[in-house]
Image (cartoon, rainbow, N blue to C red; front, side, top):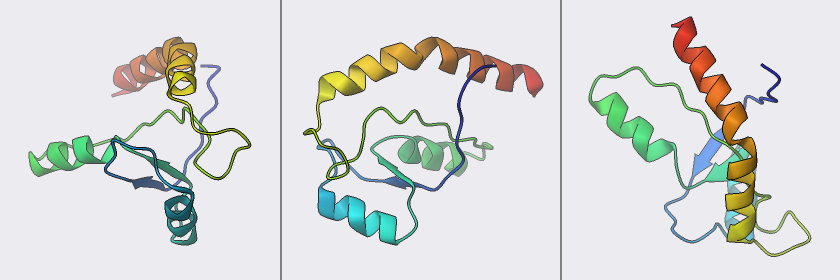
Amino acid sequence: MGIDTVQGTYAWTRGPQYETPAEVRALHAMGADAVGMSTVPEALVANSLGMRVLGLSTITNVAAGLGTEPLNHDEVLDTGRRVQQGLQRLVTGIVKAF
C-alpha cells in the first residue's frame, strides 16, 4: 500500500496537555516506543463491550524532550492532514481483508 508502518508498544497519557520530557523518559524506561493521548480509551471501551480490537495510531510529532523544537499543535494537525489518505488506504485494506 506504500505506507510505512512500525509495530511497537504504545503508552497512553490522559492529556489534554502534551506529555512532559520526564514522562517520556519514564515511559520509555518501561518499554514504550510511542506516547499519546488517544487509542487506549477507545480500545478499552470497545473491549469492555466484547469487541475485538486492533489499535492503529498515527505518530504526529516528536515526543517532548526528544526534538530540538518545542511541541507545536500546528505540527500535529499538519502531519495528520499529510498522512490522511495513506491512513484511509490502510484502514480500507484492513477492512477488506477481514
